[in-house]
Every structure is written in structure tokens, then in C-alpha cells.
Amino acid sequence: MSQLSSLLRTAALAACLLPTLALASAPAPSPTAAPTRPAAKAAPITRIDPTNWFVGMKNPKLQLLVNAPGIASNQVSLATYPGVTLDGFEKLESPNYLVVNLTIAPQAQPGQLKLQFKGNKSFTYNYELRSRNQDPARVQGLTQADFIYFLMPDRFSNGNPKNDVVKGTRAPRMSRDSMYARHGGDLKGIENHFAYIKQLGATAIWPTPIIENDMPKASYHGYAVTDCYKVDPRYGTNQEYVQFVKNAHNQGLKVIQDIVLNHWGSYHHLFLDKPAADWFHAFPSFTRSNYNAYPLNDPYGSQRDRLLENDGWFDTTMPDVNQSNPLVATYLTQNFLWWVETTGLDGYRIDTYPYSEPKFLMEWGKAIQDEYPKLALFGEAWEGTEAEQAYFAQNIFPPVNGFKSNLPGVLDFQICFGISDALNSGDLTKLYRSLQGDWMYVDATRNVPFLDNHDMSRFYSVIGEDFAKFKMGIAWLLTLRGTPQLYYGTEVLMKNFSDPDGKVREDFPGGWAGDKKNYFVSRPGQAGEAFDYVSKLANYRKSHPVLSSGKLMQFLPQDGVYTYFRYNDGECVMVIANNTKEEKTVDGTRYAERTQGFSTGTEVVSGAVISDLKTLKVPAHTAWVVELRK
Image 1 (cartoon, rainbow, N blue to C red):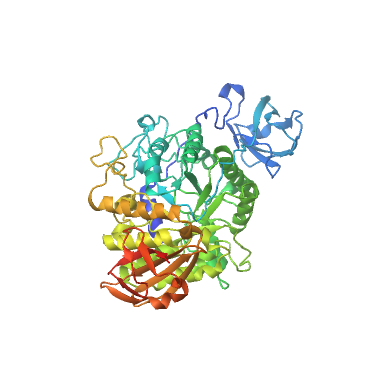
Image 2: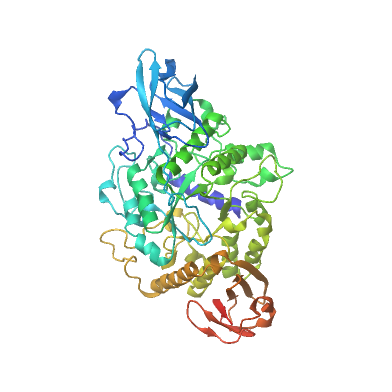
């Protein structure tokens, strides 16, 4: 299942992205409170990455990548600055780059470092060191009490029509009737609907990548980054993103940033003008990844197969970044530290996690968690078995082929597959087994269960547009362990199959002025029933910690009925689901070890009273979430 799903995903991307050649456009200056770059006349430097840095970081080392025509012929020195020392500089293969290495001691203060470049064109560059932000409301992380709302900014809501078309970008048009073009959604559009997201019961927002994707086609999805330090101008500015995170926090919403470690877009400025050829993986001819992670922990696996998984390109327009190059590894690590410190975001979702170099993943994860131990980290590990998925999270296994994951959690594809299997075939085995396999994790509660996403057919279509099954799936999602994630529009029964994936990335009704339907305001018919069901259960979950921090006990599925309990010292919630076409009379005495001491219950969504826990008559295709009462 994993390999086929990955191939389908990649085929869809390949169909909508075309490799072309062009020069990178000059990055626009960032606003005051966001990273700043000097005006062109101040120094003959195109850019320095990171665009600024911070005093007080636990790792005192800082690597600057200096980019300017012919800069490699210059010598570098540092004017005296207390607490900062120049460790040296090095030339790269390209004459347009220098790497400058600094040490920033704990006593260093914010200010302007004067980097002196001497050569045919001598000049001084003022590089900014900033204070770290001490606001305790920043970088909150995630817990099981959270509920993540996952959306695509371009397809959610257009809050600022002025940034729909940005002069100088490679796809300078907006066309809502094309699934591959930009549609105009942006950060402001998301912010305009914070109240809707909160009404639904969500506590965290995960947009697909908001970083610049200046590609000539299908750049709306965000997974082909062209500038690691810049928000895509079609979404907003760096400063607007900083404010977006702050405003979300003020509204009680956390922000998850979607990131890509494995690859960039083919119009990334560091690919168009490579610092050195070994910054990217290359084969004698174009070579794709084999999209198969099994060889990575196969004791009999081929080194060639491992190489293809990690070094092969994800697509023709997505060059594979060489993370085994220490300069590249540091560049990536510093970039993702920079975004956390600059914005105060709460977590990272890591795209295509298994495709990256294993040694780099271990080093990257440690570096991020050393600086931000509260930051949530969960990765996309689209794998076909419980053990294969657990391999990419913190687990109880010894290192395999030198890899020992330090990633706290993963997107729980096993639960996703288990719910789909149960509702389509009636077989509850996969769903039960997805939880039984939790023994392999250090802490499976840090996983993120979900029903569908932007690469998969929408949940409502997968289950045959059966509303009873929809409610069962939602009930499982919001009562199992972990931090649940809902894909935008699922709550109003948006549907379609991923053939191609643009069909499951349609605009949210009401996100654009003039839309005939506005589901942000009014949701007629079953769309309204669906929203109300999700909202009622999600908000109950928020107010009853037993569903987020309580223990879990599941009973073997029997006769098409699956039952589990969430419980703590004071509360107990029973989730009992009849996954068959007829009403089932269930012998409740089977659950006595959890129901003992309780005599009745209330179904939390409908309010129906369950007066007898010993004999339960559960309707066909129905899940009850029952708060037990003494």
C-alpha cells in the first residue's frame, strides 16, 4: 500500500510540474520586524543566509553562506565584537560563494557584526544579531488535548486580493478554474476564519508549506521551496507570518509549520547557482527515488535500494538535497531553528521524512530538540505496516543500519488505513492492530491520527458518501489516543478522489467573495449535520481530559463490534461501534473490568441515556461515545 500510494502521489506531482530553466529572481526585502537584508547599494552582496541570527542559542556555532558575484576571491575579517569570534572562512566550488564560520559566546549581546570583505571590491557588511524572544506563549508544542486543522492556504480563503498576482513571479496569474494554478488563498484568509476553526473545536492550524515556491507551474502546494528564508508573496510577507502566529496564539490556536527536508524546487536559487555540485544528489542520468523505505531496515537489504530511496529525486522538478554534505546539513538545520525563533511557531510537520539521509535526520532532530524541547515534531512516514511506521519514530528497537529515530511522533497512517478498511470492508482487524502495535513506540500518544489528507482521496468519498460511516470515522478519530488531525472540508463533507490530486484540493466554499455557498457562515443539510457532529464531539473532548490524557483499553473486535475505553481515576468513556449492517445486541458484561462501578451512561453527541450497561443494543453502522455514570 505504501509504495503504491507514494507512486500515485508522485505521478500526480509529475503531471503538474514541468522542469524549466530560468534565473532566480532577486528576493524582495523583508519588513522591519522580519529578517532584513541591506539595500543593494549598501554592499555588493546578493544575500547572506541565515538572514540574521540570535544571541543566547545553546549551540554557539554559526555558519554564514555568503552569496555575491566573485565573492570567493575576497578575504574575510571581523571587527572586534565582544563574545563573537571568527573561526575562519572557506571557498566553495562556485566563485559566487563563501562560507564564514563564527562562534557566538553566551555573553554576546545583540547588535551589528561588521564583516569586512577585502579583495577587488572591498566592503563592510553589517550582520544583525538579535535577542531571543522570551515570551512564554511561544513554541507551545502539542499534546493529546489538541486537535489539528490541516488546510492548504491557496485553497482555503482569499483574505487579501492584492497579493493574488505578484509581479516577477514565474506563475504571475490566478485562475480558480484550473486545479494547477494559484487560486488566491493566503494567510489573511486563514486568519479571517480563526473563529470558524475554533467553533469546530480545533486548537491548532497546520497549513501546507507557506515558504516561497516560485515555480512556473503548480506551485500552490508548497512542497517545492525556492527560498528557504522567505514566505511566498502570494500568501503574505515574513512580517505578516510573524503576526499571523502571534494572532493565532492570542486566539488560543497553535501553529504547525509544514517543512521539507528532503528536496527543494528546481528554481531554488541555490540550485540555479549551486555553491558546489555536491549540494545535490546526482546520477549519470535522471533517477527517481524508488519510493520504498523497506530496504532502510531490511537486514538483507541492498545498498543500491537504500541509495535510491534516500538519494533519488522525488520528481523531475524536485532536486534531492545532499544532507550528507556537512555544509548543507548545517544550512538546513539553521534554517529551521531560525523559523522557530523568528515566529514562535509550535511545531513542525516534516514532509517525506523517510526519504532523507538517516544520519542527518538523527543530527537534525537532536539539534532542533536541544534548542526547543517543547516544539512538536511529527513526520510523514507513509508506510504499510505498524513496525515500518514505528521505525521512523522514537521506538524501543536498537539502531538498525545505524539509524535510531529521535522523532517524537509520526502521522499515523496505520490508524488511517485501519479506519478505511473497517468502514469499507467491515474488517476491524487493521484498526485494532494499529493500536496493538503501540508497544513499539516510546510514546505512541505523540502520533497524529487522521482520516485523509491532500494526497489521498477524501474520506467521505472513500466510504461511499455514507453519512453513518462518516460519523463512525469521526468518533474513532476524536476518541483514540494521539493528537487528531482533520483535513479542511471534511467537516462539511467535501468529497472527491485523488485522480489527480487537484480534485481533493478544491476551494473551501465561502473563502472567496462571490462564492455561491459560504460554509463559514451557513451549512445546509448534511453538511451542517456533519459540522455539528464534529464540533460537538471535538468540544466535548476539549472539556473532558479523559479523552486526551486518559488511559486506553481496547477489547478484541467481536461479531463486527469494536469497543474501547478512555479512563482515568474519576472518569470513564466507552466507545462502542457496531460496524455491521444490522443492529447488534452486545453482552456488556464482557467489559466488566472497565464498567464496574458504573450503572448508566450518556451518549455525548446525541444526549441519549444508556440505562443498561449489561445489555447494549447498538444500531447498524453506529458508534456511541458514552460517558459512564455511577
